[in-house]
Every structure is written in structure tokens, then in C-alpha cells.
Length: 557
Image 1 (tube, rainbow, N blue to C red):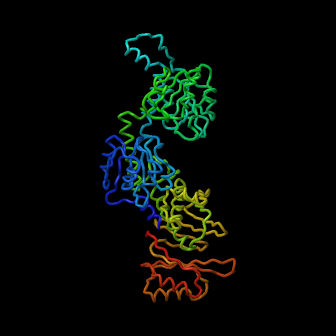
Image 2 (cartoon, rainbow, N blue to C red):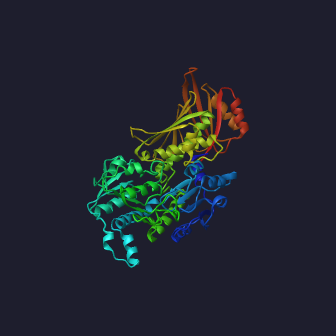
Image 3 (cartoon, helix red, strand yellow):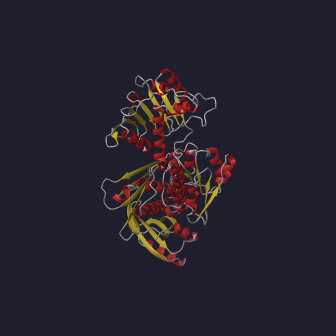
């Protein structure tokens, strides 16, 4: 299977691609999909379990929000029988907590979200919670509505001059920081995934220690995903680090980042003087939860992205990401693509295709051998930004030669890891002309290499194959022969093809010295107009001096 064929399998589009909208979505999302040619949109809300799996199996992609749970059981049931069409899941919103990412990845199903679409809305909500909490807006309103007017009960604090600590300086955290700075607040950030000492033109210092940040701030706001690291990161131990007088806590990110039991204790002890929660460990929280009516807690029912503008933006964003991927036009908002860049330039895409042809030829030349590692080296400025993507396509092509299970760029890395196959990507320091080299090492001693290039004529070339120097355009039906480099082999091969009435369109020959036998070995690569019959290949294998014969069919020029 060539790289082009693999892309075709990955992004297989039939006459009417089917996309399922399985959750409540702003109508603009479906309208966007329906405006695209070749897409059939189905909407079914409220599916779960086996029923959801059965419907997913019939669709190329699905768009969801937070209500639908695409669990491992659902995905496994969907894939049962090997008839599933599902290739991609798009989440209209930020989190993907309701999607089993490991299972989706292992099945080669792309997962993406439209996180950026709700950035401003979510940051605004967090800022609104902070202002309302600081000025006791909610309890004051309730008092007025009940006929009261005791102003002394609702004395608040001003935000100007106070220090805000932001956990997670991504899109939302940065947007919140900009608004806080405009209000005259000091801002400190904590984000271990930013390798810098400050951000926003040095206006926001970045501290590596969460506890150190807590000791300096008046307000802390969370804008991180829920992971093993962030779950209950604000607990009793963290509260012990806050400065005297206590802090305000804002959580509009994910429920469970703040330990709710420890928060209640901190409110009683004064280490926390107020909390605003838009998210909860269990949503909705139980009716008898003390979080619902605590006098120092302001709550909203997960409204971070709940604006008209954001609902439309996340719906269209998710639908656009899904359609873009399924139509083979790139990948937007990737969650499990592991750094892949799929919106490639024409030049980069040409080298992706070449990598598949190189792997197919190398596999034909060496046959089945136990594999230990794959090293992909790219050279040239045009390829540097797509090095990992080119390597992943090459790995997927290689694994697909050996495995019966479906392999694509989404799950190739995981499958290789499970089989203890190491993938190494190298960007050559001497950036000259664009070049690509792939080296395979076995669990034993073998090392096989192939090198390729694309010249000014736009045609791919194989320049070296397992030590044989050559200049050959890889395409069409090809036969690879290795033989003892003695007189008469070319004539003998030509006569066998002639007797079989097979026309040889092109022949390339390379030579190398076998250091074990100190004999010259030649490789002939013949390009044919039609695929060679198996009886001809058997005749070649039995001919004197012929060491190996393999046939491969490549797409291309």
C-alpha cells in the first residue's frame, strides 16, 4: 500500500459522507456541514451505550458536546465485526473528558475540539465571577429581592491593586490576564508547560511552584484541563500555603481541580474567604450539597461557554474541524494527533507520498524481518516543520505492511510503542537541498536504508536503496532483483520477460560490494507496463545467479 493509498484509507470519502450530530448544537453547525458538497448530516440526540455504538458505526464522523459519553465500551462495540466507518470525533467545546482518548487513538480515530472558539466567553465568565464574588453581587441581589436593605452585610473588596494568580496560561488564562491588567490588578502565572520566566511582554511573571504562587496572590483562577496532575491540586496542603487573610478561589475550568471537601474546610478556617464555582466534581451537584447554598460560595451551572456567540462559534468550529479532516484537507484542534501537522504544503505532501513509496520499495527489497527501530532523517528548510508528520506516515506505511489491524497516522505511534519499535525523527543540521532518508534496524543485526529526493521537475526519486546508488522514479508496477554481478544476467532477465510478452518500460541498475563474500552484487529495478504474473517471478527466482526477486505496485507518476 502506498502513502497515497494510505491517505485514501484514512480519509476515505464515499459519494455521501455521513456525519452524525449526537448532541444539542447551535443550528449553524449543521448548516455549515450541509453547505458542503458530498456530506450527509444526521441528527440523533440522546443516544447512549450500545444504541450509540450501533449508530456511530454507520457514520464517518460525529460531533458531540458534553452530554454524550463515547466510552471505551462504546468504541469497542462500534468496532466489533470490523465494519465501522467511524474515523473522527469532534467535540464542540474545550474538554474531551467524555471521550475515551486511549481507545480512540488505538483505533486510529482522530479526536479534535473547538477550544479556541469559546476562549473570550470563558475568560469573560471567569472575570465576571471574580467581580461578583469580590463585591458580593449575588447575596446582595437576593437580599434586595427578599425586601432587605442591609448594606453593611455586603461590603466587598476592590480588585484594583490586588494580585491575581492564574493557573494555566493558555488561551483562556492569557485572555483573563489581559482583562485583569486592564483593571489595575497584578497578575502572576503558573504553567509548567511554558519554558519562560514571564509572558505577555513581561507583564506576567511565571512561577514554577504552585505553592509559591498561592503565597503571593489574593485571587486564584484555574484554566487547565483535568489531568492526573491537576486533579485536586487545590487541596488542604495547598491551602496551607496561602498568605494570611485568605484568598478568593475561581474555578471555571473543570470540576475536581479544586478539592470540594477541602474547600469547605478552608472557607470555615478563613484560608479561603470566598469561592466562585462554575464547574463541579459531579454535575449537577447533589441537591443537598453544601456547595449549593454556602454563604461564601457563588455558583453557576457550567456557563463558561454559554453565550450565543460562543455556542455558534464552537458548533461551527467543531463541524469545520471534522469536515476538514475527513475531506483530507488538514487537521484543526487536534487532541490525539501527537504533534502532527496535516495542513501540509504541496512540497511537504510530496515528500509524505515519497516516504510511502520508499518504505514500500524497502519492504520489497528486504522482505519480512523483525523490526526494532525506524529512523527518519529530513533535510531542507521546507521539510523541517513537517518532519514528525513525514516520519509518522512512513511508520504507518511500514506497520501496515506487517499487520492485519488498521494502521494510520493517528495510531501508528501507539502501535509501534506497544511492539517496542522505536521511532526517531532527525532534522539534519546541514540544511541543503530537500532530502529524505529512512533507516530500519532489526532486533538482530540488520540495517536497511533508503534515500530519496524530489528535484525541480517535481518527480520523486529514489537515490539509494540498501546501499545501491540509483536514480529512479518510484511508480507503477516494479520488479526488484538482486543477483551476482556477473556477465549475462541482464540478457537472461530480458529474455525471460520477452518470452512472457512483458514489456520493460525502464531499467535501473545499482552495484555494491558484499563485504562478507567480497563479491559484487547488483540490483535491477524494472518498471513494467502491467503487473508481472507469478509464474514469471518464480522463473526469475529459479534462474542462476538470482538471489532475490520481489514485486511491488506503486501509485504515482
